Structure formats: structure tokens, C-alpha cells
Image (cartoon, rainbow, N blue to C red; front, side):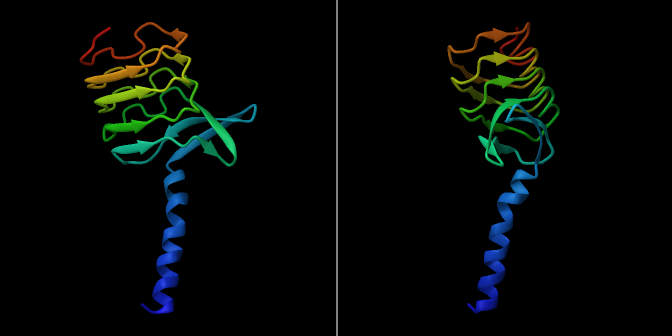
Amino acid sequence: MTQTTIAIITSLLLLVPAAVQAQFTYTTNNDTITIAKYTGSDSLVTIPSTKNGLRVTSIGTNAFSYCTHLTSVTIPDSINIIGSSAFYACRLTSVTVPKSVTSIGDFAFGYCPLTNVTIHTGVLSCDANPRFHGGSFGV
């Protein structure tokens, strides 16, 4: 390989994290981050635990709703709140809600075809119909 080819490949690799992070819009509140919207089209998504040195602590209302291409999401231990309809009408088949989550909003996983769900005992608040309305588990 020539030095020019190596330089081009290195430059392209450095751009990848920026492109991946650009798939989210965020809001900042009290030095924490809420994911406001997912704008990507990947079927497998990993939610970041930090953004610009701040902890990502919430998945906002409708953040992933109607992302019909989304089949798998990894939720980090930094998340405390999953907002209402956060994953509404996605194609998620499996989800693990980490121990750090204390609140799951109304219809957070509504109309997802979930067949495998793990929710740890730390959830203190679940609105009516919080998880699986319209999915395999019903309400």
C-alpha cells in the first residue's frame, strides 16, 4: 500500500464514529443527555452511554417510534428513564432493560413484536400499558 492509500483509509476510519453519533438528536438538561430522536436506518442500534463527556440518562418520548427497520437495541447502564412510546411500533423482538432504569413510560414498547423481555427489579415507575401493548405479551 502506498502512503496515500493508507492516509485515505485512516481518514475514512476516523469519520465513522462521527457518522454513527450523528444518527441521534439530543437535548441537554442539568448536565445529562436525553436522546430526543433516532434519525438513522440501522436495524441494530447501540445507544451511547455518554455524549460530549455527559451521561446519556434518558430515552425521550417517541425517540425511536415507528423505526420499523429497528430489530435490536442495546440500552446502556447509564439510562434511568425510558420515555412514553420510546420504541413504539418498532420491530424489536427482544429487549433487556438494564438495572439502572427506574421508570418506563406509557406504551414504551407498544406494538413491538417482542418475544423475549428482561426487566430488572429496579423499575420503580411503570405507567399504564408500559411495555408490550399490542405485542405478543399484551397488557
